[in-house]
Image (tube, rainbow, N blue to C red; front, top):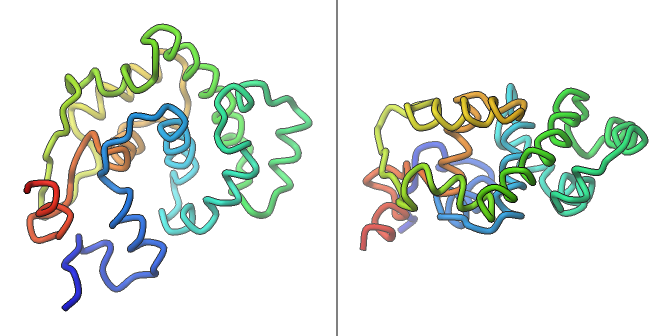
Length: 187
């Protein structure tokens, strides 16, 4: 018998199922991983997540394994190199925002000792169960974090992107009750 999953991860490509089963909603505290997901979520804006997942390895290579310091130092030549990389999303605004956001990310690390401390501080280090049959695209929490990140100078971090980010990094757990991941995490 196959495992019951969230509806978006059933009858889809294996890469999507693997992401659901192994990553989505798993609490993440590592700053490199948090930066990676922030970059990927911002590149996903206007596209499907499967598109990003299929290009994820290319993104890792193109963005120096999401080393935030290296990304913060990208120059015009690197931007042009990325714009010519068919393996990633070549949107100039998103590329520039990744560089800009890397600099803001570092500022947040310096202020809070880590980006993890910053992002998890919004929930007092607690995972929020926000499971609903009708999936949301934002919440008061994502509104608050998006507003704060924008105030700090980040780009492509609207409330919908941030809500998806919070789900991806496990701050918000949106596995439905019937999903085996919900059951595992509740045990």
